[in-house]
Image (tube, rainbow, N blue to C red; front, side):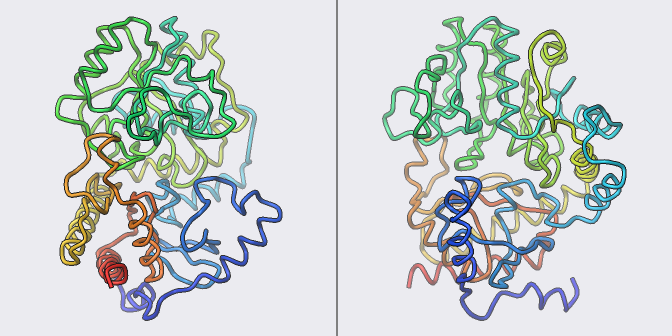
Length: 438
């Protein structure tokens, strides 16, 4: 890293303020509900930010603050905010056209890359969001099995649609599906069974009833807590689904192309029947996918409806090809894993020095920091020990020192988070911890 870049990325020598972002959010609220276009951007402390541009691992906001970014748009920006190869591919396609209402060579090339990289992917389809990919999985599984019931797990998130937004953050002791939103159709839970995750016996018992079309889970619980599966759990789920004729679906919207070129299924060596992808697949462009067994995906060519005007749009396919070509290179992952591990270790050390209890768990490219806990969580119930209020105090202090991290505890890494930026981040974590323990 050059001296110029070092100075540019140096931590601020004063606490940052966000008055202009606050003013613009208030102004935007006249036209946008809450000033934002996603509920996941509401209520951010000290204010939702208005961003002007991204550069590598950093964002520059409306107040001129330069922030080392670990939101990474909640996961997609694995190559950073302005990767030259992805931008060049998109610019080249812009001159050729935007949306064809037909197939492009780029779409076939992107599909080939997915099928070569992902263990379960014998066939696939593109769509525009992870939520849509999950809906396709639901329809395929029900058509293929002739059954209706879907098993999901406490704390796992599979999109915001009525039929899956259940028990994403259920209260302790809940015994049935818990709606995730006001206005949600309660009858949509009639075919949903919610189980505790990492409990193979509970899953086996439910599948034995013989009415389950599909089991859907995050292979590693990254939406909440970055919790790994217990030894043998995924294998047991695979065996039980095969035994009872149930379709096993891994939701890899977060983990796909982020924890490794083959996703969590390659990391853990367990192959599902179907898997859903989004986020890191195209480094910020709106691309998602469903992939899996050819016999299941081919249902889409035999009367199972799946559509979308923007599916496989040429510009987003150019971004997908460029992104996946980089992510299939071993050297990409060598640097990501090295720097991510150093960051996790450094954050862990700062918490130990401060005397604030916390657990740092997950993958080097997608991990979780849980203040208030002393042991890694095994499921959603264990995460009740996460002191979310104090963690928000921590992230609020952290952003004032020039580092932006998600308030739910998740941290995402990009190829642009190099050694120098990791060191600066660890220093900022130490400053923020001093602030909240003062």
